[in-house]
Image (cartoon, rainbow, N blue to C red; front, side, top):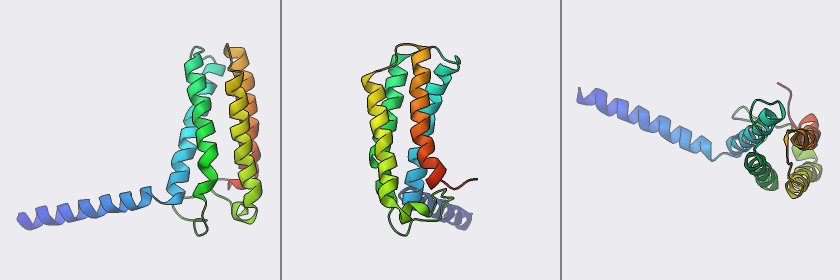
Length: 147
């Protein structure tokens, strides 16, 4: 009985260590960052589609999240992290890192501009989503592998 408990504890610890190891990997960090951006865009989209009422605080928080993620996103693409952990990053990122960084900087710029002219209603939130979508698509079209 004790041997089973020790074996189960060892397996649990090993699995936990594997998860902790993966959590710090650049590919995993990138995926977590993109999930934050997706959640932020989803919150804005829900307002635009009328699924949620307009809420300036939600829009502001979403724009702030997108700006913060985009500002540091390129730092998570070191050499050697091109594959693994179900990465959707295109090899083109490492071939043209300056352009990749410029596209991330553009998202920061777009989010900043939208924060400065914070939407006041559902209609103006649609324009915000369009601007953000264009900035995101510019990067995804070139630097994200198609599923």
